[in-house]
Length: 590
Image (cartoon, rainbow, N blue to C red; front, side):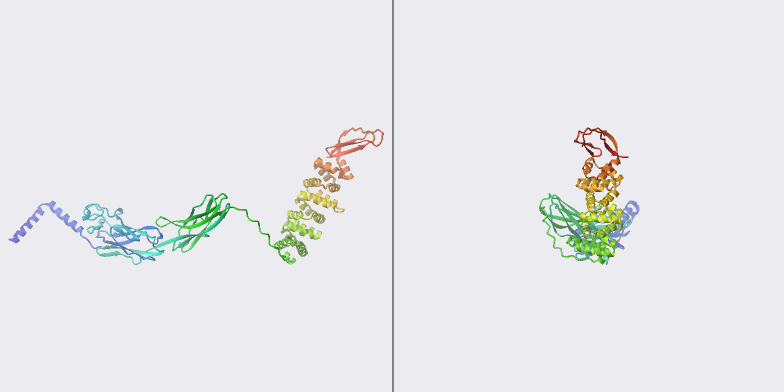
C-alpha cells in the first residue's frame, strides 16, 4: 500500500511533465542553471604583475602597478585571497588581501576592473541577481564577471576574462636598492602564481648639495658656487635646477640649468649670483631645488641651502708696493741668437731693473753672431725698452738693426715706434747713418714717425755740422703732404733757423711745392730765415702779376708787402736824385 501510494504520485508527476511542455522546459532550465552555478576546479589560471618590471621609482613616490588574473574560457572559479610578497633592502610583506582589497603600511590593493572579450567593466559593481550570483557584472543569472561573495564565480562564458587589482606602493620609508615582487591568487584552497624569480623593480633617489654653501658678495659684484646632483642606486634621470629666496637686486643663473647624473655617479652645475649696486646688504638664506619627474609622473624634489651675504661696496685698498727686484740674469749672446723672442723678455727685464748697459752689451754680442736674430729680439721688446738700448749702441750698429727690422722683418712701423722713444740727438745720428746705408729704409721709417717727432728730428739732423743737406734729402724724399706738415711743425716748434737751412738744399720743384703749400702766416715767419740764394730762387720761380708806383722822399724808407707770396720789399731813397724803381708781386711760375 505504501509502495503504491509512493509510486502513484510519482507516476502522476511524470505524466504531468509529459503533458505540459512549458513545465518540462522550466525544469530543464533550472537543472542547467544549477549545474552552471556549481563551482568547478580551475584548470588554467595565470597571475601576473603589470607596469612594474624594471621601473626606477624615486623614493617618496606613490607608484601604482597592477595584479592580473586570467581565467581561461569555460571555467568558473572562486577568488578567495590575493597575496603580494616583496624582497629587497627593506623587508615588508607578504600581504594577504581579500578579493575586495585592503591596505597595509607599504601597500594598498583595490579591485580595479574586469576585462571580457576586450571590454572593460567595473570590478565588484552589482548587476543582475545580486548576492546569490555575486557582486559582479553579468547579463543573466549566471553572470559575466566576478563578485566578492563565496557564492559568486568568474565565468569564461564566451572567452577568457581578466581580473585586475590596482596596487599602490608607498616608498617614503623604503631603502634604495633592487626589489622583487611576487603575486598569488587563492582559488578553491589553491594558490596560483608565485613566480619564484619575482618581478624586479628599483627604489632610487638623488641628492642636491652646494659647495661652498655660503657666498659673500659685495654690492655690484658677483660670485659662483657649485651645485652637485648625486645619484643614489641606479637613478639616472634629468634633474632641473632652480633657486628661491633671492633678495631684490640679485639674479641667478645655472650653467647648465639641468643635469643628468649617471647611475651611482654625479653631475655638477655652476650657480652664478649677480648683485646690483643697489641690492640691500645683509644675509639671506636661499633654497636650491632639484626637480625630477618620477616613474609615476609625480615630480619629486630635493633641496639644498645657500647663505648669501651682501656687503657694502667700498673702494679697493691701494695696491701694495712692488717687491724689490733682484738682479735678473743676463742672457748670453748664444741664448739670444737661439731664442730671440724669449730673450726679448729677459732684456726687457734688465732694462726695467736699470741694467740698460748690460742689456745693450748682450744685444751687441748677439748682433756680431747673427744680426737678424738681434733685430728680431729688439723688435719683440716694448718700444720704450728697445729705444733705451739703441741709445747706447754704436750709431752704425743701431742703424743696421733698424734696417733689418724694416727690410728683414718688414716692420717699418715698429722701427719708427722704437725711434720715437730714443734720445733725439741719438735718433738724429742713427737716421743720418741709416740714410747713407739705405735711403729707402730711412724714408719708410720717416713716413711712420709722428709729425711732431719728425719735425724735431729734421731740426736735429740740420744741427749736426755740415749735414743740413741730409735733412733736406729726407724732406725731399718723403711724401709732399708729410713734408709740408713737417715744415709747419718746425715753424710751430720754433725751429725757424733750421727750416731755413734745410729749404736752401731742396730742389726747385720741392722748394716751390712746399712754399706754395705753407699757410701765409708761416711763410711770413720763415722769410727772415731764408738765405739770399733761397729768396732769389723763389723770385725766379714766380712771375710778376701786378705793379705798384711808390713815391719815396730822399732818405726815407718805405715797405711794399705782397701778401700772396709773403714777400716784403723795403725801399730807401739814399740820394736826392729823382728816379723810378719797380716792385712786383710774384706767384708760382707754372
